[in-house]
Length: 223
Length: 197
Image (tube, rainbow over the protein chains, first blue to last red):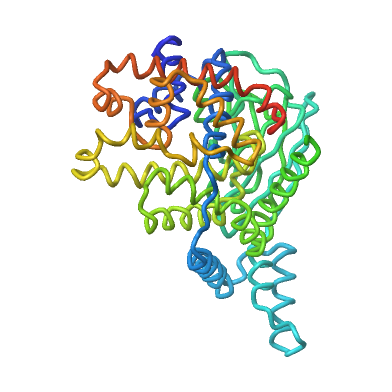
């Protein structure tokens, strides 16, 4: 797909009018072409369109149903075995012990929240780069957010690639390009907490590599 | 105005973080209180069926509950992110409803949608709503209709082409020109309302 063809579709894409195939082709193009500056503006303008409408009163029952689902969603975490061995689970176990001893900790939601609490790791520079980062993992959702600052300059043909390493075997977890401020926030899905190390390398774009072809410039232990 | 807006954005970001990091149901309830009405207004506009609109709103906020960690300020304000979830679910619902009923009524859709008094004819008290409504009204009618059909109607390029009996390229052109004009009209507003990089 050419830049001109992409430009023709960007407005429709932002408004939800592009077909899944058109969306796929445009996203594929945008992953390696960064001249389409209007993308963010179109998305922002599309996001403003609902504000042209008057808010409507939602029936009370809708909120009650929503919150019932939310509380139900919290409940199963009480039954999960304490497989997560970090500090938060220690707190959860302590809270459970207090509950068992009848010391007044009766709000089971507190326990549920502790069991689902995020785990956080710091990443440090592994070479000359000044990059620092934080990985926040949400065990209940099996989702992690990797936030990186002061990323090194990237050649136009390259992308950054995240690696999750277990038993010395790296697994590609996603590619990204830095924002204009040299920072990036990357969403990782899966059981991130089961790996030993997270690391980031520069790899050929737009899709990255299946195994690392350069040394990591930032990394952190997940143990 | 800037500080009020920034304050609201900080408040919203903190609420999403409370949902993502502490699984705080009260934070989700607060987000619902803030934006449930706008979300319902949007889905009613898209779907028209109150029962289905309520389902979409509930699903969207449950989606926020489950996926709050995916929010990034790079993607705009919490309100924009949340309403994009509502909009996407609304489009999914509309596309599942793509039925004979919808096709039969398609001829009436553009005019009916454009003439909704709550958007076009009432003097709105809310400044933001006024600005956005006025920007939409400043578009040539055919561009506005095409944007309306795509965003609020959930119609694809080819469906709009069939609906309005115009070439596919004309649909894409109208959307692009309309969005460019909105971009020019709302740039100053956008900077003020949503100070993003």
